[in-house]
Length: 176
Image (tube, rainbow, N blue to C red; front, side):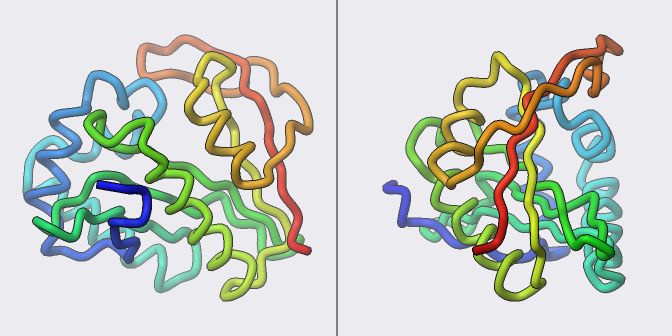
């Protein structure tokens, strides 16, 4: 699968079973950086509830969640989020994860390009930001490929799934 061979779309209730399977296959590597989302998806029913909550948040314009879908089998292979919206500025945080089988293939970079365009052009967001663990080389590359620049280090700004506080690199990008 090339970086262009995927679909980015909003989450749907019908994604629950396959999204849960993808999360389950990646739980150990994702739980530290997505403890709330990954923790909420413990089985197919809780994954349905999670998706319903994400759909309600989008309706209220509180956050937006997108699935990266493999078109050959319609399986979710990753997720992208527009969250922490501050409509006064307006600004928002982006977050993403990908199935380990698709990591390093450019899929997240291309999908993030679509989400950035959506945020700037459809939602009229002025600033997007990413918070990335310093040791997450893949996320740093994705951010930089999409025109984000490091604006600083946020010290002890994130609590991993195991409770450890870590520093984060703060990347930002302004709408042109």
